[in-house]
Image (cartoon, rainbow, N blue to C red; front, side):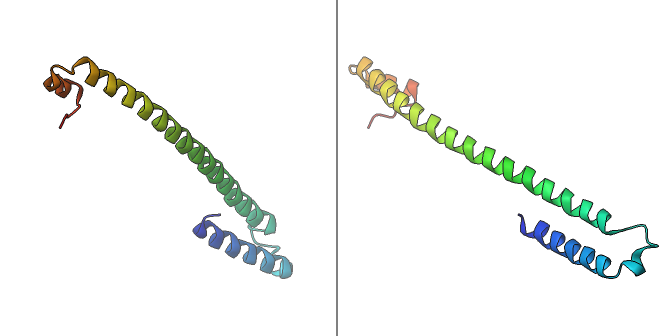
Length: 101
């Protein structure tokens, strides 16, 4: 759980505990332990949502790295072909973005 959500959730849990221990003082108030629990549940739900997004993002980064490796191999092949095609006229390689030294 994110640090700031953890802090808020813990504070709410402490308040709920105090409300339950002093129920006679809180019975006339509009807020009750179940209301506080609903706030805690909302925080937990948001945290689960964030964790799911983190996992999805991690998976997408992994997929992007795999695509990058795959495309690098193709780029290498295409550059070698361009170099071969223009072996007699290497200045043409500039048109491909290949700087021949």
